Length: 21
Image (cartoon, rainbow, N blue to C red):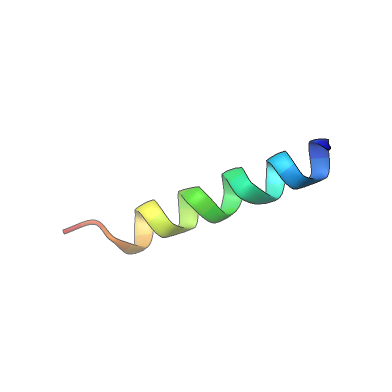
């Protein structure tokens, strides 16, 4: 599913941005 992939990508990007130590 494109929607799921987009959601996962966005979530992963958010998580990576959240943990930038």
